[in-house]
Length: 350
Image 1 (tube, rainbow, N blue to C red):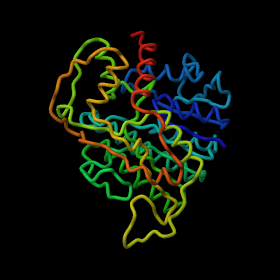
Image 2: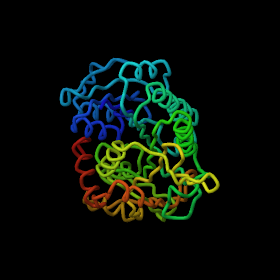
Image 3: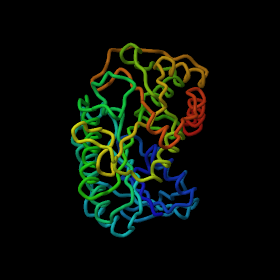
Image 4: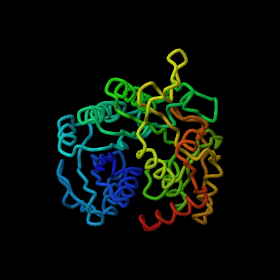
């Protein structure tokens, strides 16, 4: 199989491309390496995959010295002409779409970036899939789509129609766009609603990354809603395992789907939605304690009120993924944090 993985200079995409390449698939990775956060980290991920970043030129493939079956192309998914050329040239069997403009709070101050990458870019992905009739499109959605929902654990079989950030709205839009293409063109599409993913090579805009940096330096950390928050933290290796299991089984129509009582997670088209998380929410203060244990130093905590765009709690109902794919996360919080802190100290010489 030839698989397109988008966002391979990003956190999750980096690990997915590596794992698929090691499994023997032919991988084409793309990323525009934007400046949303430190590009040195993005180039570092590519170098760790054997991509010589000194040779990168826009729209020109550079193949890995570690995995000859993995080639990377610096390319913006919002570039329609280049995306058309990409799909035409490589004729992918499947697509794992992980590229996006990330960040809940950033979407409040920079909304147009989200329309360009998360909407126009995703449309280019769908059009590419339609043109060559890929066997399966798996794409990243987000737990943020649950928005004002307070009925936990969050279930994909409940409505998610009240997002509280443009980022969340863009991810919900992706789900609706994917359904239309599944319905119109019979393209199997599967959306994965990621819950809070953490681990080595993570994103510097994520709270745990900022916390580790501040604790090591002895500077205060900002903790919102006075610490009264919890998240369904999931270690990146567990997430990657789930993605690859789903990628190998294209979505199929639900033969029992009822238009009078429509199930949001399935359809009469080959379309599915799944939560992918840990199903064990961790209180934010307990997560900080795990960081303190790994670093060997107490945090200086600055308690603040809730921020716009935030939600109080995330908790994934994982029953569908567990039943259909035997997906069971294995990494406990302390073990995952220990691995992250070990990588952080090495990468940043901290």
